[in-house]
Length: 180
Image (cartoon, rainbow, N blue to C red; front, side, top):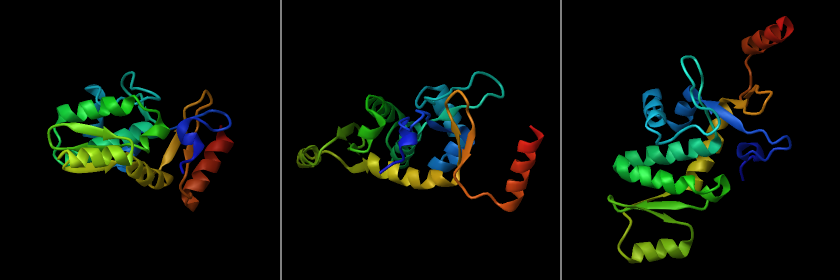
């Protein structure tokens, strides 16, 4: 369903990461939001944090999925306090397990459901005003990230551009490679 290198399970066990500006565009948030969430430790980049002026944060696919859920919860009016508890729940799961989770909220509490039975039980109990299928957000992200350059997190980190290069970018890259 998702490419293995998004999960750190590629043949050479390198994980792809996305810098802050790309993460913002992929998820649909502002850089100011991303920076605030990182500084307040709501969503901290798991691959590389900022270590000073000029350093670049590097966000994993799981980080992007959590950012997308945070954005969706904010858009539906859930308080930042409840979002923090939802993020804590999501952090406890591996990235593949996230795809099986649906978050529901009654506007006060965020509930985590991992099976259709739990969803039915929650709804029958009168809980849940809206739900967010984390797997749906992840599928949306996996389609979006194809248009953004990624960076390998391994020792020999390099930028991986999923998008087709235009002719000018291709010439620049060839020139840079021959000069280096």
